[in-house]
Length: 126
Image (cartoon, rainbow, N blue to C red; front, side, top):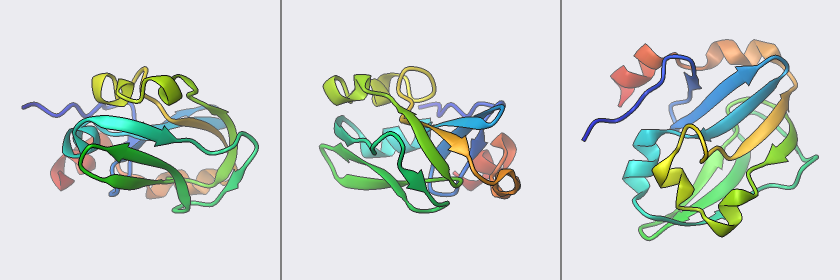
């Protein structure tokens, strides 16, 4: 099985991806993470407006195998959540980088971005 790692994203060693768009960032879990979890059956998303610190628990993803905490790759304020996942959490398995995104946050500290992995480093890690 080929695991997709996109060059235009940043990654964490806990298998979250982050797409920087100006002063906001979209966050999800990687293709590797969703394949390890297997069939995702439930997602508990945070409240819009919640302030989050880097490495805090961002949300919960539950699969047939386990319940997994997803961590914030950077600090910020939640400005949007993917409500679609409440009805169809399996979207994360089908499209982890596009339709299966989790949250969008307003970036609090841009200097935290430099601590994230690029695609090459993430590929080496997995």
